[in-house]
Image 1 (cartoon, helix red, strand yellow):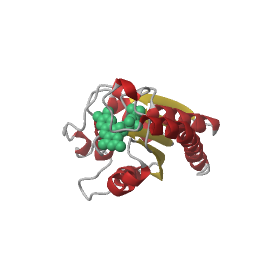
Image 2 (cartoon, rainbow, N blue to C red; image 1 turned 120 degrees about the vertical axis):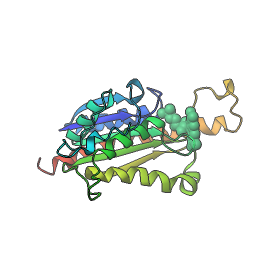
Image 3 (cartoon, helix red, strand yellow; image 1 turned 30 degrees about the vertical axis):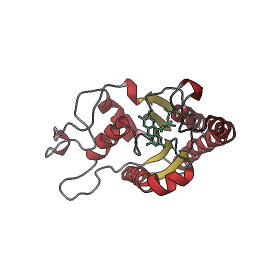
Length: 217
Ligand SMILES: Cc1cc2nc3c(=O)[nH]c(=O)nc-3n(C[C@H](O)[C@H](O)[C@H](O)COP(=O)(O)O)c2cc1C
């Protein structure tokens, strides 16, 4: 049983990473072998449109571009569980998250009949973290982010999403021009809510591994 954890935040030990590490712990507790990767450590871009993944007679679900991401995509297609997280930047996921998704989905897509070449099954847990409180997320972000998570249905497994709202962006707000945020509220929310979010992440990691195990593979 293999779970891959991908951090699409440039910060290696902040909100997104901490939630992903909690999800990793859950996955390991449920018996998975795990691989954790900070996507910002890798050298890659979005799809370069080489179209080698669409060549007649060529291997499918394979990205042929020679960079750090292609071998990782092979690992994802061979995994049982993918746990991926992104902070929200300007109302959307980060550029590394987009680049990863572009490369992953494009090589599974048939241009003959728009079907899905991927025949395996990978359960996916998606973590989004954001400054926005839940009510703002519901109004402004929910539709777009749900669509982004739902796109992982092309991996044929369960897809679960965990959002962490109103996150603490810096340790000491008094050192930054961030008067738009109420530092006391942020700190209090962090202390009360973030441990609950960590526990939800741990449970999500464990559950997705257990579900993969119950397929009897
Ligand atoms: C460039 C940038 C843009 C951001 N844009 C948004 C945004 O549009 N909406 C939002 O809710 N939070 C926004 N944030 C805040 C982050 O999403 C939030 O602090 C997140 O939890 C950071 O994740 P991290 O701690 O894992 O880095 C932005 C942060 C940065 C650095």
